Image 1 (tube, rainbow, N blue to C red):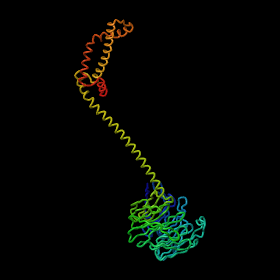
Image 2 (cartoon, helix red, strand yellow):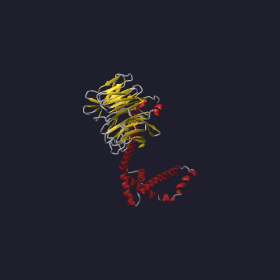
Image 3 (cartoon, one colour):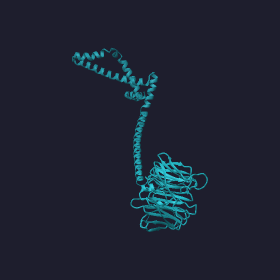
Image 4 (cartoon, rainbow, N blue to C red):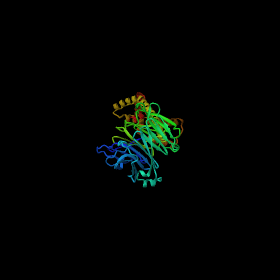
Length: 491
């Protein structure tokens, strides 16, 4: 999930570049106007939850604001007009040392009678720096540092005399320059000029009814590709086109950017191509120009610059109102596929859990249905009898449970009477047959029953009570067991 970290530096921001995965530099200000808004360069850092300022460099009074920036191995090259006596220093180099912006040197580079001429674009790669002026006809200045070793270049470079400076003149106004390895790309509205390492210059015109507006480079090990943004007609749309930087300038792919009428910023790095417009929208593409995500209404004013972190997971966008937004956790390409697979696996897992829940719920429903049917059967089978038993119990002044227990006791008494009758019948039969009875066998049952003389004397009463109980059971159409079971369920 993409996270937005926002801050506002209080002054218009026009340029930005990442130093590494977390730190980035921005530049802006009020320009040459005498309104009290300073022109400065700021070093910022994006943490997990915020953007904080690490250091800043304020340009002298009377300077213009930074208009172009390039970063190479923590070396920051800035295009900015700064008065220096009767001349203007136009190119300034800084290094990031222990979270500090340390200025290395400033160069005049070229002279111009027009004070409004500024540095439209700068690009640095190794010991070579490219500077494009805003003058018409356009001029590109190639600065080759005489100190070939990086350490020596940092320590000894002080002025223009430390560079071999050559220039390339273009008839049209120059929009942008990019140095990719030893290949120099110069962009105008009508032509892309590519100066190859073999000194050959190739040109590429935009398609009919289109004009070039921006370009960025995708640095890859095998071959670098150039991505160009072109506007269609009178700002009717934006087309992104990828070109292989090799002899022949083979076009690889093109795609239209939905809802965009013009591109206000364009950059690329580490599998990301990012384009923005004047409405504050930021669209992220893969290097094959497939739309990865849309970040709409990021800024209230036009987006002035874009930058991609060295790991390709963060994008910085800036605006004229001083707002800076760091978009963190941007994932495209293979990582995006992995994330989609992980999400799909999670969905399958959740679906399985849901299916098990439904299955268990159905089993519970079946059990509830079974219990409901049993209750219905109980209601239809026992409720009428219980109601009748309850009436009889009330008439006798007894509880229904006592009635059920009484019925069970009468059943036990019937069993005892049947056993006793069988014993008497056996004795009578033996007397008739003249068979002497075993004293021990005769004594034990005779003793058992005759000791209970009260039971024998009340035998008639028991039989009569049994008849009453039989009538009670017959009238209620239930057995003793059913009555006892019903009483247990009721109580």
